[in-house]
Length: 162
Length: 164
Image (cartoon, rainbow over all chains, first blue to last red; front, side):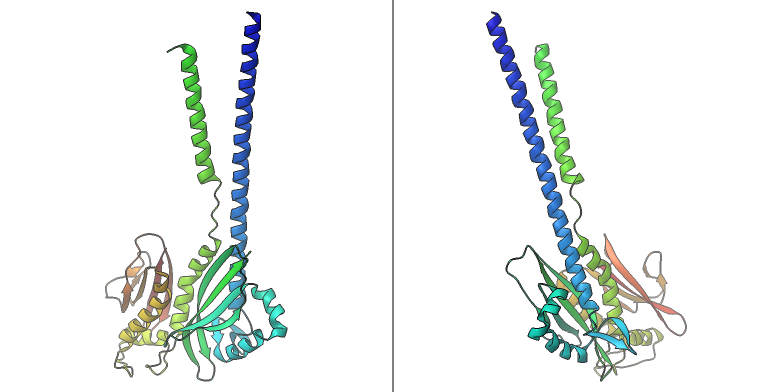
């Protein structure tokens, strides 16, 4: 009789331990999931911040930005500077410098008004090994200093982040 | 039902409630908003589009800017562009082309409004009909930019509203 009671008590202890370790396991899985989801959202946030900073670098790039009496104008691209900038940016000896600025991205400028033409590519470097890809469109004035005419354009920046 | 069975049932209910609570906390409490880029672009979009639009030159209207054309439209000086349109219709067709190529291309709804009498509280025109009106006001969340343009006498207001 005593033997049977002891067996039941052992089973009870084992059952309690099994439940305890099950709960511990569930808690650990839950904790890992929360941590990994936090890491993922932090990574996504860092990628998005990187894409914003690249977009801002393009908007304030002295190589293409309009200026009057050495004062830069916001949201304005000098179309005369743009022609020269394309050849400077795409020179092989400058590729490392511009990679530091724009990393893996594609920057193109398109006229929307008065005529909708083909996009002009300013910089393009892509990778197949990327995690996130973002596209940012920024409206800008395309200013021709020779004719003093402002056209409506759009800078399209596609960034790839690892 | 025995007392022990009732207690076990109560315990099971408590466990189920704890699990549901935990799931809800994980679902809504721990998920952070990661739309940093969207917040940045949408806050800049209306302002950038409107600023650039008002600076844009009109090729068929002696290269006058959209600001100058809107001033002419409000003052009614009777300017006729080389394509036969008056300043008001020219601004409207230019705004339609630009907005459909930018905001419209992203499949977002918008409202463009230029008025000589503008109610800042209700963000709409009053007394007189709008000088230029494209699209409809957003019913829900929106990003908007209002730009005042001086005329003689008074001020006209240009509004661009982009629905979220």
